[in-house]
Structure formats: C-alpha cells, structure tokens
Length: 159
View 1 (spheres, rainbow, N blue to C red):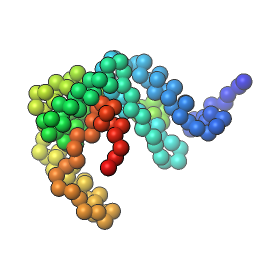
View 2 (spheres, rainbow, N blue to C red):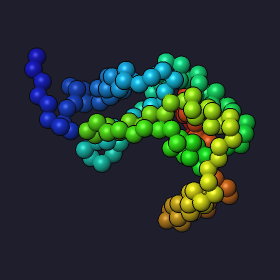
View 3 (cartoon, helix red, strand yellow):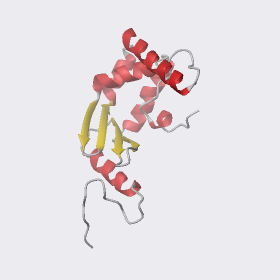
C-alpha cells in the first residue's frame, strides 16, 4: 500500500479524521512531562477546527483537584485565563496548535490565591458584552465560571 501526502489533504479511506487525530494527539503527549493538560486544536482546510483534551500521566486526577479547589474558592473564567497564561506553552505543528499546561504550578497559583488583574477582568466583560450585542442576546451579570483543566469539568455537557 502506498500513501501520498499532500498538506491538508491526508484523509483515511472513510473520510473520518478521528483515528488520525487520535494518533497525532498520542504522539504529542509523548513529548510532555507527567501531570500536564494539553489542549490540541486541529485546523481544517475549510476554516473549521476540532479540539481534543488530553492528559499525560496523573494529569487527569490533578486537573480535577485543581478544579475542585478553584470552584471552592469562587474563581472564574478571568482567573482561569490569567493562571493558565502564566504557565502555558503554545506551539504549532503545521495545522495543529498545542497548548500545554503543567498542572502543579497551576495548582500552586490556585492555592496561593492568584487572581486575574482587574483590567483583564474588565476587558473580558467588554468582549462578552460586545458578543451579546452582536448576537442579540442579553449578557448575564458577572463572568462565566471556571472552565476547568480536569476531565470532569471539561467533559460536562454545556448548559
């Protein structure tokens, strides 16, 4: 069997990219330390994308622990963005974007009471208000809650 690779045009015979994406995510995970959460985004030629959540050894349990502490402390989406940005590394491999979050330092920040600066919180509120205005929705007061780093929160159904 021979395969021809043309960037953006590699498809398994069924047209389902899931097995290929899973293999790529598995390969990416091998390059990271234990206790790391990975957000892997595959950009498609049609402009769409698909995101996969992945956890290296121990990261699933630690991610749920981080989330439990964050929720108990009342942290929100602005705090999640701020703390995540303090520790993340972002890389691109062609049409694949990888965001890696080592969870031990994230847990330490949550435990030490690190919060988003007020100007970032205000900016996020402006983005939400603008999006609501453009879509004809009424924004809810406050900011969205902590989205999560662990599988329990990240895999819950959106409400």
